[in-house]
Length: 276
Image 1 (cartoon, rainbow, N blue to C red):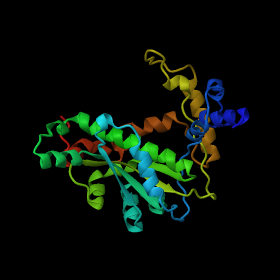
Image 2: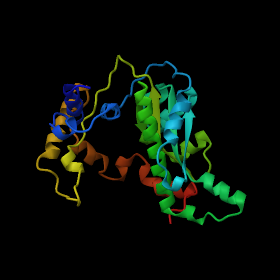
Image 3: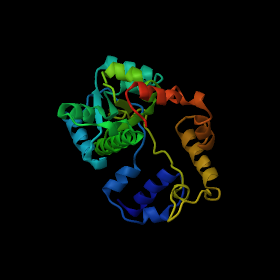
């Protein structure tokens, strides 16, 4: 990749911010692919290449896992009727029904629970919040490895956090046992060239990078500049030009903005998680 292409990749990711240190720093094809990530919500109906599922799971299992507990699982959903029902749970998102593959990533403590019962050994530690966090982190790391692998093959992805709108409905649909939570979905497919996706700008590094000690003060003007970059992006994508700040604050304004996820604690308890 030429220096010009590097700068273009960095500019796309930061919405016009110079970020010279990134463009002139260490670089390879992996970094270029990571910076080129984009959310794909329009898929062709073509099936995935033979062996894709096995390859992406191998990539996922190569991610780090806390204490090698491997407290995650994934359900690969290809059946159109099941994808349609998942789409309904996720607020009617069309791409969930249209993508040829939907991966439902799980925080899975049931495997260790069953192993303990089989071996006659206690698993009281599973009843603590820490173990749910381990499962969620493990699932996220595995899923991101899979997403990077898929994008390297020219496929598109989009995460579906809205499966948490109704975890119990997902559990019933997919036959999930107690101590298993659907953390999110991941739609996979060939991007539709008729509806291309663009690289979405991110917050400037000065907002998220803290050197040595956390500094709560936002970089002067950085968020305002990012709002402008997001409005430009939204305009280019034919989206309402609301920027980032207003959209982010609207998303956290109260329990009513969480689309049912304000009940997550009670749902987790009913699903068997101890949360001590």
